[in-house]
Length: 147
Image (cartoon, rainbow, N blue to C red; front, side, top):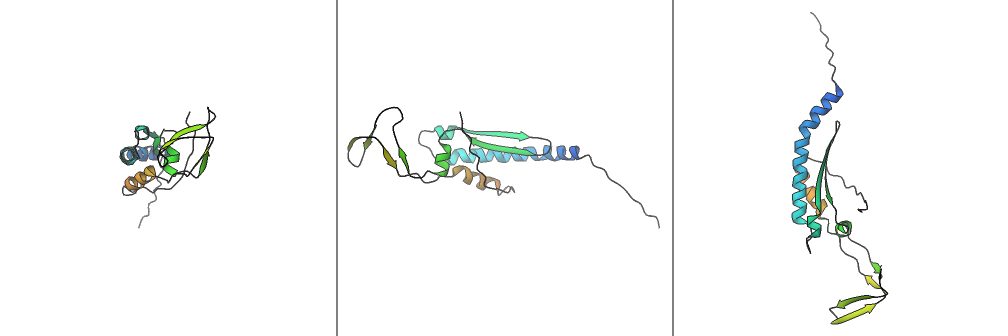
């Protein structure tokens, strides 16, 4: 009885490139679906938040990544909510606003804002779309100032 030995040597970069080329269309389609779902479910008052959604793709030799970003400056405050905070005038000496309960205009030097509840439309969109398609979702938050 004869025994035979075989040694298989794989070019790691070629294997990774093949995997990336197969995964890239699936990741791109999933990212596009998340973007569309996020646009549909985003809170709308004036439409600025909804219009500021963007999608980017990055395919490298070892990984593929899709990203949905919201460029509106106040997106993080809407998504995560805010705590109670003081509002002070930035350019003038006083604030002026219409108070419905009193039925008149009020002028004051500061106002205590009660805060806002979180409305995590982006997170919900990601979970609703990506999890059924076989992706694992982790919650990581990246804060970058947009200038």
